Amino acid sequence: MTSPISQDEALFYLENAPSSEKDFIALMNRASEARRAFSGNTVQTCAIVNARCGNCGETCAFCAQSSIAKTKIKTYPLISAEEIFKAAEAADKEAVARFGIVTSGRSVQPGEELDNICNAIRMIRAKLKIVPCASLGVISRETMIILHEAGLERYHHNLETSESHFAEICNSRSYKLQTETVRLAKECGLSVCSGGIFGLGESNLQRLEMLNTLIDLKVDCVPVNFLNPIPGTRLENAKRLTPRECLTIIAVARLLMPSASIRVCGGREINLRDFQSWIFTAGADSMMTGGYLVTSGRSPSEDNKMIADAGLQLTR
Image (cartoon, rainbow, N blue to C red; front, side, top):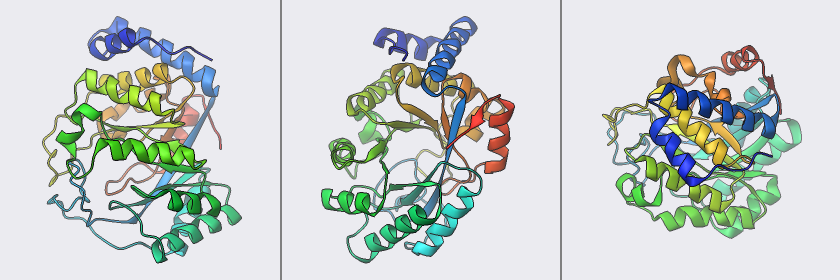
């Protein structure tokens, strides 16, 4: 397995590779080699269902589901276990490896809500090849255990950004609560998927800070998102990242965490544009396909073709 790069190297690439062709190509070569050492010639995809949308009391500056956002979106309560299963079934038919059940709001409540999600997880486990994951906010140890016993394999909880930048993005919860949720999931025997969104106005040092926090937390999978500025949110006028900036971030994440899955998720279409297939050269071994929470993405068939065109093999 490739050894992680140093902090100085990581910061050098973040600050120089987007503007220097020599440094950028050198970085891509190193990251691509590290990806091959981790996953060979294979790539996985994941998909999600927005199982409860909107009316969220959190103040995240990027999110259209926040109650402080002025974005016009369709809001709805938790959908049924059968509806969750149907979404998983559709993804399963496209050879998607993992399926995330995502809910808006701080948490899910024990009782009817949790029972509904657990029933969906059991149905998916019993009838499909796709692996169920969940992103349900800040939940208790007891809830984590119940989900795990129902068949949940992985818990997703993004840090969003670095600790030093977090208060600029969200002031309704603490960063400590973010990291404690990740630690709790691991303590309960769950695999953990945790990353963040780049392009929130953070510095390169803050990007490195968040990546280092993920290293310290020993997460299994790192979702790399790029801000898609949504009208009506506080960050609606944020400047988009360039394709080279995005690819540099992916590559640095890969080289800092050579034994973790680096999964490219939201915002890739609008930020990477014609360079989407370069995510594999940059070190990504997995990607989200289909729609996101309130924005559209590309169809699994389009992404599966891109993977094949890149000379890689889709795997579960």
